[in-house]
Image (cartoon, rainbow, N blue to C red; front, top):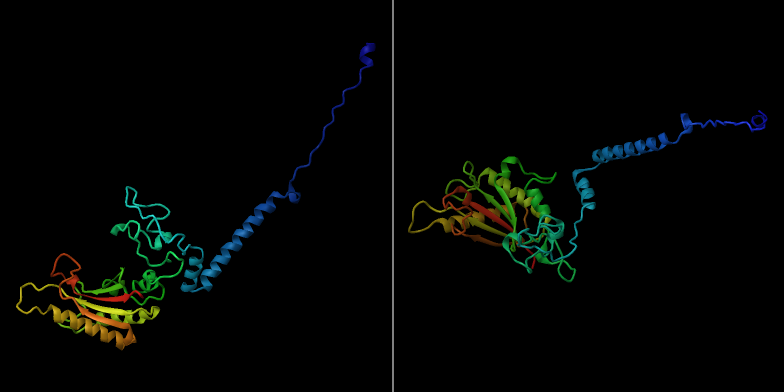
Length: 279
């Protein structure tokens, strides 16, 4: 009994910890700041979309897109993977001289719409025709092309330049049957090309093509018809404001360069307006 009375008493101390509830906590402030920041970004985006034009929005998009080739010579492989990597034909990096000198396979050859030469300077062989193509094919907000007219236009870039094909369809020709008299559709298409040509200063070539005759004739009229149609288009371009000095040549090819295998198909009746590369 005496030993137990001399033992020190056991004291249990309970400490009350105050939680971070109420306005004393700081976690909600971080969440609220993130929410306000997101809302501000959203409203700025909506305001920009409403306050800018299509051309300005395209400029903003181009600012955040790489448009300068990293290397003027790309891989352009023709093996099992076909060069489909970061330097693929579909990327802006490929828009230099491409595989033209390294591996000139037709399927893997770069279009060369933009780029620089080995010395870092611009070169006439790599002119940018993309803006003109976009307007002619209805890809820009400023395009004047109707859906009906788009059925008669196709473009392609070659070593010669940008070729704009205006061609017949089975249900709508661009010239009155067997003549060089343009239809209303042809007049509208030539007007479109003439107005869009101000985007470039390149010289222009006009070439006429017609389909083959179903019978062999002693005097083939295809030569005269293709040439006269090309001459009519040349004159129409001049009348719509294209400078006469820009029109470098007018050629009739008759039925010697067919667009499709069927020699008598309407698709072979076409006018090719070529924006020639600068030397």
